[in-house]
Image 1 (tube, rainbow, N blue to C red):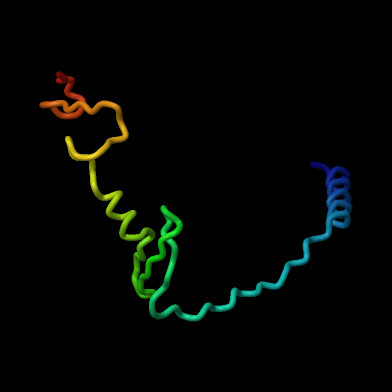
Image 2 (cartoon, one colour):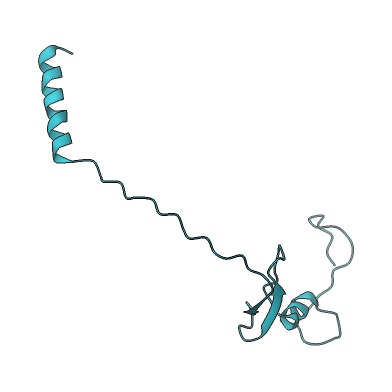
Length: 103
């Protein structure tokens, strides 16, 4: 690169810098500290949205659903008891997944 090209490039760079001034940084403001939660917290169930339940603020993994929703999701379908989501249930005997034995 010769001196003439270098001079043109430097002149172009100065013109671009003058056209685009650097952005003015905004001052950083940290979020105000929230007071420590203590005692019992009352929240609505995430699933039924109406039932309120309580839990301690100190609990590491607080619950997200009420007792009724929790029991409803825990119980599985038992043959001959209650309704199922499906029109017909079929029980397969023997073999593991992917072994191909189906009767």
